[in-house]
Length: 161
Image 1 (tube, one colour):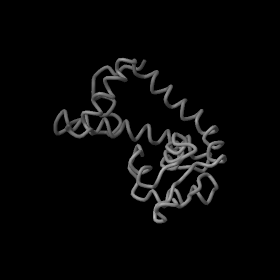
Image 2 (cartoon, helix red, strand yellow):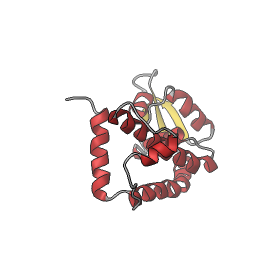
Image 3 (tube, one colour):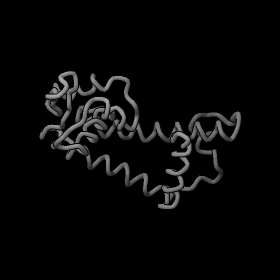
Image 4 (cartoon, rainbow, N blue to C red):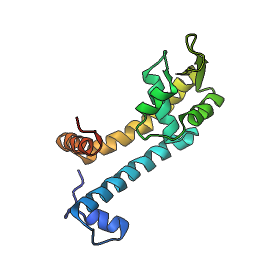
C-alpha cells in the first residue's frame, strides 16, 4: 500500500502547482489526474490488440449481452465514458469482424449489434492485462478505501433522486 506523506503532495508534484483555488478544486484535479492515469494504462493494454479503450468498452458491453446484443442507444447508455459517435465505433469493430449488426424484423430502422466469436476471442487476450490494472489498483487501496472511493465518486455523478 502506497501512502503519501501529506495529502496533495503527489498532485502538486505531478502538475507542478503548489496552490489551488480551494480544497474542492484540488480534489477535482486529483480525480482527473487519477482517471487519466487509469485511462492511459487501459489504452496501453488495448493498443497491442489494435483497440482503443472505447472499442474495448463496446466489446465488453456486448459480451455481457451475448448472444442477444444491444441496439446502439443501449450501448451508448452503458459506456463507462460516453462516446459521441457509437455508430462509428461499431463500424470499425464490424469492419474487423469483431461485431455484427442486423436489422430487427419489427422495426427496420433499428439494428442490433452483437459480438462475434472473433470479438469474444480478442477479449480473452485483452482481459489479462486489464485485470492486471485492476489488481494494481486494488493493491494501492484497501477494500474499505475502494468502497469509500466508489461512494464518493457516485456522489459526484449520480443524479439526485
